[in-house]
Image 1 (tube, one colour):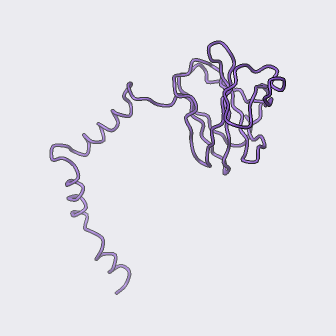
Image 2 (cartoon, rainbow, N blue to C red):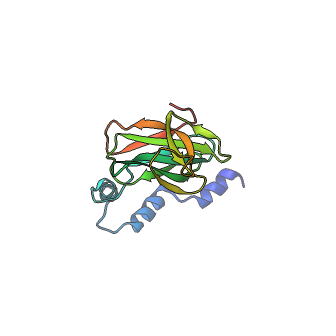
Image 3 (cartoon, rainbow, N blue to C red):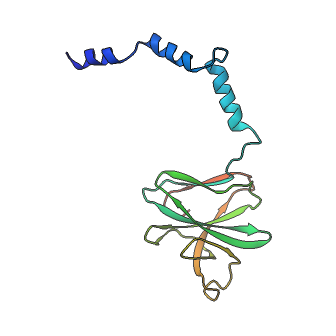
Length: 164
């Protein structure tokens, strides 16, 4: 018995596959209706969704810190760990700031996203108010990349390992 014969013995016919799919759906629901309902639930305004997402398109795991204005004060938060070819939602509410600041390191702590805006970070998880005098306040100064969101309420940043 060759491979094709074995495959035909264990693979159901297209008719059996359609009947099996129909048995999964309620009798009154068509596939079109099911897909329409799924699309509507995704686009529903009441559904929570990310407003600033960072996608890691490198081959390395990265650690990410984010800076933004919060209540008229500069604030940095970290760390998000993002696997290779993964995305993470770092700001979950609609964006109110035009500029978001990002700093990323590899797992060894070497900067892979390094900009010109100096802000404060820490070695462990942190939320730091203010960006001045980082060293004097016991923090580390790092150079963040400024991301212009063009005043959009949602934005996705693709981290490629090359500073913009």
